[in-house]
Image (cartoon, rainbow, N blue to C red):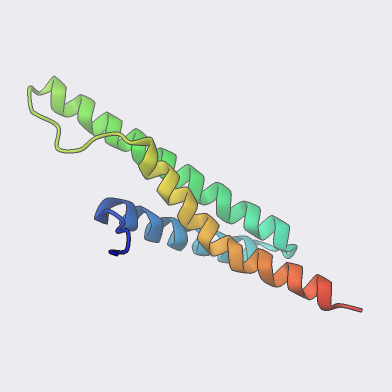
Length: 107
């Protein structure tokens, strides 16, 4: 039985979503946010925004290509924005788990 594979495009979106979430979390920490919920919210919102902005950029490039009479080389896919956001969730999941475990273990 073969393991399922992730298309290269979606894997790239996952990695960029993770990186954006990490950078947003570090930026929020540097800015002064210390609550884990605030840091996770900043990370998730950043990943979601970057995913949506990338798809808006793709839509603009497609429109420009079609206006010039060219065939577009890419497509706008909601799944790409979702993969970017899931990458942000992959960053936040360990933070949430650690936070939950520390609350549980605290006396």
